[in-house]
Image (cartoon, rainbow, N blue to C red):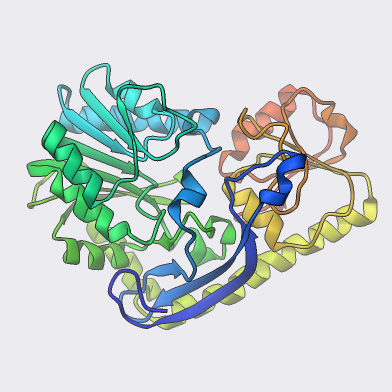
Length: 395
């Protein structure tokens, strides 16, 4: 395949086989609708963008969507922090567009002191809201938005610019809606922290690309956007927050652009050796989890799993089968009483006897502290494990 960004040749990094869509949850009688698609990770040999080979058509993934931004208290806290960050750097009375707004939790916060509009393709989440456009964000929809609403002071895209192979068009579409002083606020999972460490659970069909700062710079050179600020975040197992504009602009913030650039040079982000090392790291993580599952199977006392996130679907479909009884507990109402994609374990709410299980693993490990506390509040007496960054007991 050729690179989605610069059209150069690519090299295979890891082949996961066929994996189901990570946010398609079905009832037991609907499981025949489930699809599995090859999941193969490649790296571009020119711009070093990590990317997937085969990308499902967006309507298969996003027309009906079962992830809700407000289902996780950890994510709610992050979105509230984003709103505070925006107010601190740009103030209020802004004209804002949020791309991929999901259930509009952030847009609704921002509406209190700004004029905020949203766009998202999921027909099952926001069809009743007047402040959202149910559509995909691309050049065509961007032109319609511009004709109807004009340009925006701030455009927000949190973890959406990695979600299809036309991400470059999405950046051009955002630029189309910007005036000379507009700000494009972007957050993306940071490949150095995640895939670069062998944390393969961020690799799934919705994440067509996994970005380093180096690969982002190459994209913005093509699109014609200036990187005016970069911040390294802990969210999603490691993320980058960027402020972009049509022209150079300074913000009174702790800009980490130079620092992150230097760190990437040191680890060899623009060399094939860095990406070749990912293959062995992923194999090592999978082997470690398989050893854990073997012990669980041998005990035959069941396993309590906390969280049915996208990352958890990838994890369970990449390791050996769990042959003992399993229940998964998740806060998201849209996932409860359905089956985990691929492995078909039942998903429940918290109203079960947790102590029917002596072992528990938290697949939503990026919120492990909050979930561990919740388990303790529910008087869970068993052992609690997290699979990443390294498999370990946390209580």
